[in-house]
Image (cartoon, rainbow, N blue to C red):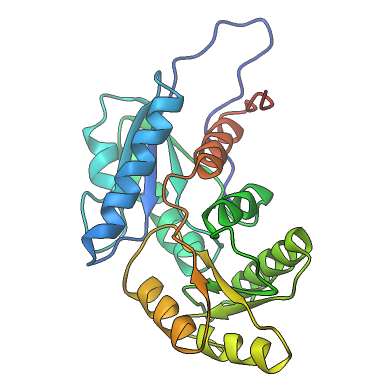
Length: 252
C-alpha cells in the first residue's frame, strides 16, 4: 500500500475534522451487489455518524470512485478498497484512482484491503448457518494471483481451526478446486455434513455459481455473503482509522 499523504494527529493537538470515507467495491451487473455495498456504507455511517461515507464502484454500477472524490467539498478522504485479497484490483485499479485524484482539491489516502483479517473470519462464521457440520468448504470468487490465493487458504485454515473440522478453500472461477469438487472430496473422505462458507462480500453471479455447485455436490447448507455484518463494519472502520494514524477502541 502507498504511504498516506495524511499526517497522524500529534498528541495534544486539536482533533482534525473527520475525513470523508469512500468505499470502493468491485462492482457487478447484479443489482444485489450494489444493494449490499450500500447497506454496508449505511452501517458504517451509523457506527460513525461524524463520517461522510460514500459507496463507489470500479466497474458496472456507479458512481466511480473518482467521481465521488471530485464531488467532495475539499478536505480529506480515505479510500477503503472493499476487496478481500490484494489481487489485481487492489494492486492496480485502486492505486490508479489515487494517482488520478492527485489533481483534485482533496487530500486522499489509501487504506489497506480487508483481507487477511481475523475479523473476516468472525464475519464468515456469523453467516455460516448454525448446523452440526463435520467439514466446510470456504468458497471465494477465484483469482490467478498466487498471493491472493494464499490469503484465501489462510482464511480456510483459520476457519478450520475455529470450527475444529476440515476446511478446503474453493473458487467459483479462475483456479481449482471449484466448490462442488471440494464438497465431493470431503464427502469421499468421510464427511457427511459439509457446509459452504462464503468468502464473498456481496451476492452476484460467482456467489450463486459457488452455492449451486456446492449444493449439487451434496452441501447441506450455504452461508450468505458478509454484507453488512458487524465484524465487517468494524474492520472497515479500523482500516479508516489506521490510514489516518488512529486506532479503533477495543470492543466492550
